[in-house]
Length: 274
Image 1: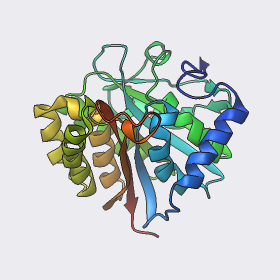
Image 2: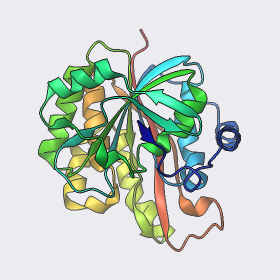
Image 3: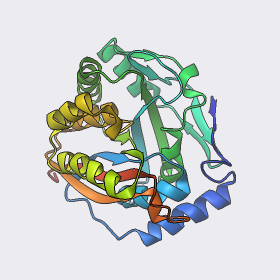
């Protein structure tokens, strides 16, 4: 079982405090309705007080989900490796309880492409996927997860992961979630300009354009590879529309320091309603 690595630091350390903070962000986010069947979300992963107000715009779409398997795809900030490391068995624990791994879907993804391999240890201290759990566990009654972490984010690995997601998830009722922040530690006026290009490419559902941008400007999104892989897989799984739900930066909250900010995006990828 993976135990929480950043509870009590990046987000509150008790269930009651998590619920209160998540509810505050959900209440402040405008009520959004999905323009179709929700296939994927793009969500940030900074400390909850900073990125939570943006993430809430996406996670609010899950309020009517009594059960869900979430396939989480995020970047590694601490361990360097090639390929995509999966936490494939057991459960993830936070102060909100334990979310079991959907081992059937995990096995399907492991079989889908050798770029995906089982390696729990690199997940132990990483925050990019854990920061999705406060919203998921608080909102969804019966939650299962499949955590996937990208090491290097080359075009070849992004395409291989997208193919694995397409093959492994075809015909399954799951939600893909790509975890990424945008530009880091630029003055807000610079960050907002850099981020606007990424937001525009996501909004156009143009994964190829975003991949080209990442190859020339790799610092515009720490989880750019996961975002592109999820965009490509979501399209293959039926999504045909991207909706930008909210953009913001760390200077919007707290001390409102706009001298060096991190950008955050919440977006939904949807298929036509059946």
